[in-house]
Length: 346
Ligand code: ADP
Ligand code: MG
Image (cartoon, rainbow, N blue to C red; front, top):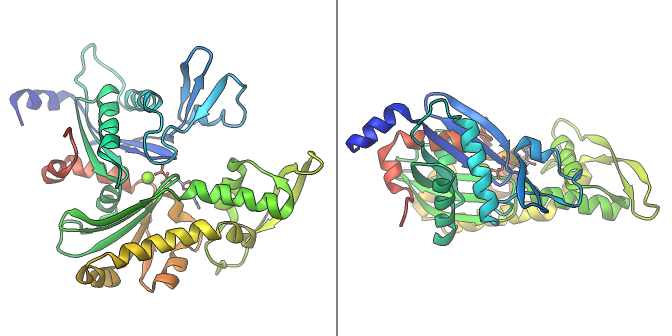
């Protein structure tokens, strides 16, 4: 660390950001998680101005007049809209670390990216982080951060497998000796489940529902396998496709299961394929250690049982599924070798 860096680090904070497709979390070293908001931005298209970000912006989804668009700039796990992402990042960074002095050094930031993004995409996240107010930016791969945060023995000479099911992407990685050995990123995750539920309700019940309602249904009664504690049902409301009038319907867990069958299968196949590409010794470790599920999508009921049954490997859900990535980024800040392996500016 240079002399200047030493001085800076006395005053500035170290910050960790989980820039998720659905939610962004920010942690500050020594303070813990200080921000947890949806990755959403509302824009006034007439004057091309950001109106609101995060929780406030999400409230506008489905309620916005024509001139306001509500965007998820990372919908597919990468920066789809650079300017909007940068505006969102700088809003979150300033909110997490408000200026309290006239002059305040900028923070060092560790931020995660999905694995398998191209170097152009890495560069875009790096640039957006610097533009948004970082003094130094380090990029680490999301499943690595998730594994560190969940307490997996990533530095050990043993294979660990982590599957992070987020909103836009599912990240599958085999980790050993501090690095990702095999990985796969697929653009099928929680959002895809929501769309599949909405499609199913439309086709089977002739009822039009929005993706937010579909997400509520998925979280409340959805499951990957018949529920061991008993099936559930729920009263839902939507617009009748033929009369265009509001109508209610009672739907069951099984409806949701039927709806999400395909995306669920695709996640299963991707895990199997990753397993096949894994060195036999590491695969043997994983059979013993099990597979860790993390990310909000891992909380789908019976997800662990579904995967355990079809993979024949023990699969367990992390009790801290939502926070592993940001906590892992934060821990990486204190680990020089993890930072050295990260992407900075190549
Ligand atoms: P990202 O890292 O991409 O921002 P998150 O890890 O925050 O994503 O997970 C968001 C996803 O998790 C959303 O698709 C959301 O619907 C889903 N989710 C959250 N809670 C549950 C739950 N209890 N059951 C099923 N899915 C859930
Ligand atoms: Mg995530």
